[in-house]
Length: 315
Length: 289
Image (cartoon, rainbow over all chains, first blue to last red; front, side):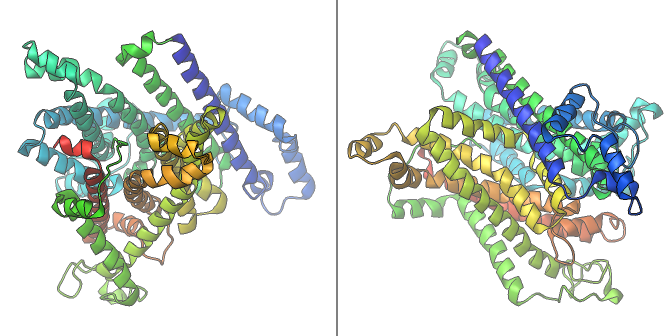
């Protein structure tokens, strides 16, 4: 158990360090001098050089990387070129929109997908299964941003039930804020739920063919009890794997969906930063999201050990 | 999307017979072929010229003349979807090619060598997996600027670890087999065995994964073009059409509905095709039916 955990932890840390090097390298090869960009075209060479010194741009590569990476660890991402405020302040403002959105979407997707998967696996090959999996097949093919547009048309333009976009902020009250996250969360969740339902179903069907399921049935356990107690638990490993991957997709998905609904989240921040060539912001948000993905995958690896006792006892 | 690694020993006629009775394969094949034909036809003929802007005809509702209506420049939506199809297919296809071309040799190599080489390749995989496709696309466009080529590179890079993983897992299942042992006894080296015995046996696996990545590539290209990082106007692309539609949802909903449906149908067709191929070539999944 300890060896397994340590190995996973080490892999996550190595990946994180390598990822930070990649992100840093990207900042290095980007054409254009950030100091010149900040000062504008009319700045003299001396002024630019002075600012480059202040920004630490003249230091050797390795020491700049260590300085940058050290800053990340203490949540000091540097200052935004365009906003002239610490990047962490911008991130803090935006993350309270993106993170709840991704989490609500993840919860929604799980709540929909697991029962559908159970339902389909239980009725394997019958009409209910065919219909549910047909719907899932369709759901996998729907791009979430198009689905979002259709939801806006239906619920905001036509039925006028929810706002078409924008975010009032959590200070306006929890309910109005949640209301404006409702459509984006559904748009993100449903296509993901379709994938998750398919995985849950096929994992369950595989498990249901195992000998111990037949044994459980033979000793007189009702089908429902077998499905929930024996099958679902054993089918959890592939389901958890996909859940972890989905979190990465959802985080990336928020980037697009926030643009559909004009939500002031990390995704909008990144896009504004790209158009304004505010690269330090792009870099920081990308690094943050990558770290989140790595952390979630580590969590998934750790949860394997909880779900699968064999991993726990393995030395 | 669990893939199994049993290799059926059947002849081509058997497989063909199964293909014709597999509903998923048939439906997927027909849809995919239809999209491909539409894309090819668009090179020679479209109902209207997509490069001509006729402002007098702007945002017209679907009619016998314009089946899917017109956009804000008076361009025929159907014609634009037809031209957009070849753009989507080209981007996704090249991205799959990049993924296969680099990922499969990497995965096969890792499986053949094992040990530290295998470990290194897998860690490299973890690294790429940590960057969701959209994020790597954002970084790439931040450096090189937006465009179809950079979208292809971004999606292609994301495909590499996927194919590396599938090729490695498939190859690892082949290596312990008797015919590999026989080949080794005959004195063949690892590279030759990989080329002559391992790769031909994992081709079907790669084909199935290829259709899945093709479908994902079409979705990714649409997403990138939608946020302005992919294909640039005036080249019609499905994602870009949806972006143009967004601010006109009330006045011209058809501008959003039809390009979106084009994406859904294409991706659905490819997924059905992939499922069908997996079904036909994998005896284990058939037994469960």
